[in-house]
Amino acid sequence: MTDATITKSTTNGGGVKLAVVYVTCLFFIWALVTNLLDPLLKTMKTVFTLTPVEASLTGFAFFIAYGIMSLPSAAFLSKLGYARSVMVGLGGIVAGCFIAIAAAKLHVFGVFLVGLFVMASGVTLLQVAANPLIASMGKPEESSFRLNLSQAFNSLGAACGLWFGANFLLKGDIFKKDVVITDAMREQALGFVSNVYLAIGLGLALFILLIFLVRQKITDAAPKTGQLVNPFTALTSKWANLGAIGIFLYVGAEVAISLHLLLFLEQAHILDISSEQAGKLTTFYMVFAMIGRFAGSALLKTIKDYTMLAVVAVGAIALCLVVILTKDMTPSTHAGTVNLLLASAPVTSGLIPAFAALLIGLFNSIMFPTIFTLTLQRSSAPTSATSGLLCMAIVGGAFLPLAFAKIEEMTGSMALGFAAPLACYVYVLWFALVAKKAPTHEIQEGVAGGH
Image (cartoon, rainbow, N blue to C red; front, side):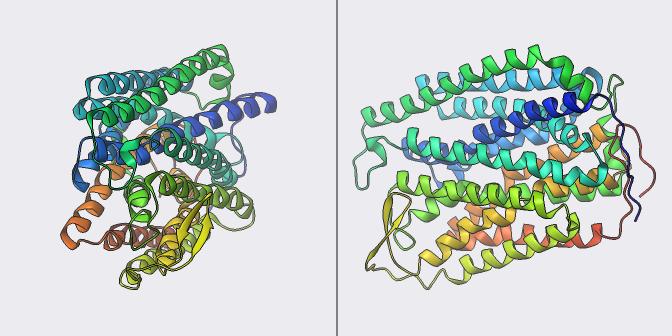
C-alpha cells in the first residue's frame, strides 16, 4: 500500500482553517434537519393514524432524495463549484421547510413528504460538496481524522435535532397515554411542527447570507472545479462501487435504528415511558455517536482507519444481537424505578436491550466518514463523481427502515427488526478487512492512478 504524503495547497493556512469552520457548520445544520425526522415520524404516525410502514414513509421521502439527486448534485458541483453548491443546498432546505409549514396548515401528509424530499435534496448537495472538501484540506493520510472530527459536530447537530424534536414536537396532549384523539389535538401537534420548521427556515436564510459573504474563502480552500465531470464515471471504479454499497448499508442501518428507537423504547416491556421521555432518551443515541467521533478522531492519529472500522463493526453486530436475543427476556410486570434523563423508567430486563440499542450509536460513530475516505483514497474515478455516487448511496436510509418495519409487522416484534441493521454491519466489517490490502492515492479532482 502506498500513501501520498503531500497534498495540494490552494490557500494559506488561515484561509483553510476558516473554511473548515464554515463547512463544519454545514455538518451540524444538515444533521439537525435530518434528525428531526425521528420525532416527526412519531407525530405523523399519531396525527394521521399510520401503520409502521406508512409512518416510515417520512424517512423514505427524505432519503430517497439521495438516490435521485446525488449524481445531478455531483455534476452541479463539478461545473459551478463548492461555494455556489453550498448556497443552493441551503436554499433547498429553506424551501422544504416552508413546504412543510404549508403541509401543517393543510393537514395533508402527502405534502409533508414533498417538503421532506425538497429538504433532503438540499442536504444532498451539501453532503456532496462538504465531505470531499473536508477530506482534501490537508495531508491525505489524515483525511479520515478531519472528516471524523467534522462528523463529530454532525453528531452534535443530530443530538440537538432529537432533543429539540422531543421538546417541541412531542409535547401535545395527543401524545398522552390512553387519550381520545380530537381534531383540536391534531391541530395543536401540527402547529408545533409548523413553528419548528419556521424557525429553521428563517435561521438558514440568515446563514445563506453569511456563506455569501465568505464565498471566496471557501472557493480558495476547495479543490479546483469548473469542468463538468460525468458523474457516472464513478461506476467504472471497483472501489467507488464497493464504498457505495458500504454507505448504502451503513446509512440504512443507522437510520432504521434511529427512526424506530423512540417507538422501541416507549414499549411497555422495554421502558414503558411516554413519547416525550423516549424522545429525550434517543438523544443519547447521537450523544454516543458524538463521543465516538471525537474519540475516534484522536485514535485515528495512531490507529489505521480500516482497523478502527473493523472494530466498531464488530461492536455494532454484537449489540444488535443483544437486542434480538433479549427480546423474550423482558417480563410484563415491573418493579422499582431508576432515574433516566429527568424521567423515571421501570427497572426491568428491558433495560438491557434499551441500553444496547442506544449504545449502537457509539459504534456507528466513525463508520460513515471512514467508509467515505477509504473509498475516496481508493477510487479511480474523479473525486466529485465518487462523492456523488457515495452520497447517492445514502438512499439506503430510505429502504432499510422499511425493511425494519416490515419485519416488525410480520413478526410482531420490533426487536427482531434489528436483524436488518445487523446484516448491514456484517458487510461493513467485510469492507474494512478488504480495504486493508488496497493501494491508496491523494484525494483530488481528476482520475487517480489504478486500484
